[in-house]
Amino acid sequence: MIKDLTLSDIKSISIFRNINIQTQEVLLKEGCTFELPKKQVLFYERDEVNSVYFLLSGKVSIYKMNEFGERKVIFILNEGEIINESFMSNNTTVVTCEAFEKSIIIKFDKDKFINIMKEDFSLVKNLIGSLEHRNRRLCRQLKNSTYIKIEKKLAAKLYRLNREFGVEKDEWHFLNVSGVTVTYLADMLGCKRETISRAMKILQNKGLVKLEGKKIYIKPNELSKFFKS
Image (cartoon, rainbow, N blue to C red):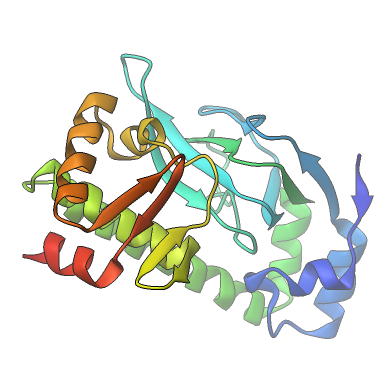
């Protein structure tokens, strides 16, 4: 169901902070929200997308498929983030976006959103800041994907997930994001499930990770020292 945008929705998106009142009013007029059920695809790789999407609530995953039909998860986006940041060109999308859990999406027409940007430099500056942040995340992923053992790659990924979704619980931190299984971690790291299972066992034996059912607990400080050593 499509719903009108509210001022509360606008204030939930980091890119819309400190924009002027007139910009807020235009965004409220031009935007709308809709629900994206779990596992439903928002757009596929090589789609032509004429909208700009923001994540109001829930989580979505961004991934690419390789030549063998295997997916490599690049990001799990959290609420408040822009989804398709490369909307300025007329090129097709280079990634697929799928709902990791039930999510609410904010949608704007691409051309209308670009016109809104022309009138408010704060909005442009916020968008550039968001792109810089995502670029740093990609650089960290690239660093952690080469020339290190898989157990250290896994430790780095779990540490990063904890920074976004971790909840402190005594000496452990619980990864409060449903659906992050060994299989999904394999997709994120671009390797086989069996490989991640072995790496997870190594981290468990070192007392850095524990599994309780489908829940993952970690010790972030110790994990950080491990993958940096």
